[in-house]
Structures are given as structure tokens and as C-alpha cells.
Amino acid sequence: MKRAVFLDRDGTLNRNVWNPKTQAYESPLAPERMELLPGVVPALKLLRDAGYLLVLVSNQPNAAKGKATMQTLDAIHARLEALLREQSLFLDAAYYCFHHPEFTGPCLCRKPSPYFLFQARDRLGVQLDASWMIGDRITDVHCGLAAGVKTVFVSSHASAGTTADLVAADLWAAVQRIVADQAVSPTGLRVSM
Image (cartoon, rainbow, N blue to C red; front, side, top):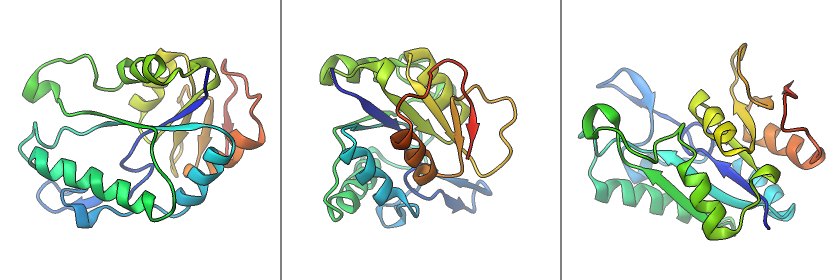
């Protein structure tokens, strides 16, 4: 069995982008707006060197909401892969939920559902209890908990009430802790970084 780190995308791997129409920071709506956050490349290299598979799990409802076409979403993902490839990195798998309950109705795959983590377990031979989920939303934490993986909540703000195993300011801080202390208990240890 293999260990994996399941990674949220927007706000964890790449910058969210200001959308003047919604007056909020959101996922990029064009490939040229895809920009990796500082520390992401060394963090992913450290995980790869430690023997973890890298698996992307992301909710991407912008096509369902009419904000982008599926072709644009494909191009944004291709840009992410190109940015990683430039650094000699690759994802072992990428899973996207393109649904949104208000526009497409309920689905099996939208986080906090653990559906894609189970898919990766079955397809890649991932040992879930030796794996991690890292994301910047509580739905990422709930997804990981539902699948039986350890969780990291990435936030630069106060995180009172999170049920994550770890809280970190960014991906780099999270990964340093995961690799330094691979014996962190999946049941209840919460460390702020």
C-alpha cells in the first residue's frame, strides 16, 4: 500500500484571484491567472522525496455556475500541470467535481464527500490511514475525516473549532510538519503552526 497527500487546489496550491463581478477572491477563470503560491514547489518536492503520492482533489463548479466553459477549466488544469512540470513535478492523479448543488443538483463527488479519496485508494492502492488531506476550507477537513485520513487545515487566520489534526499557515508549513513527524496520531492531535 502507498501513502498519499490529497491536495485541495485553490488557496492551497495556487492563488485565488479577485473577481470584480462577485467582489470575492475565487479560483482563476483563465489559464494565465493560474499562479502557484510561494512554498508550493519545495513542499511538493519534499512530499515526493518522502514517498507520498500527490493527488489533487478539488471542487470546480464554475462551468455549472456559467462562469467558465469546460474547455477553459481544462486549460486551467493544463496550466497547473505545466507549472509543475517546469519544476520536474507531476500529480499522480487529479480529481475534479464540476457540480454545484444549486445548479446541477446533488452528486456523489463534491467535497466534503470522500468519494474521490476512495477512488484514489482503489485505483492507486492508497493506504488511507497513512495519508493526509490538506486544504484551506472546512469541507477539505470533513472530506479527509470521512475517508479516514489525517487532515491539515491551511489558514492564516484564527482557526478555532476546526477538527483538523494540524493547522498550518500554508502548504510549506504543513508539509514540513508532516514529514518531520510522520507518527502524528490521526485521532485528535491538533497543532497550530
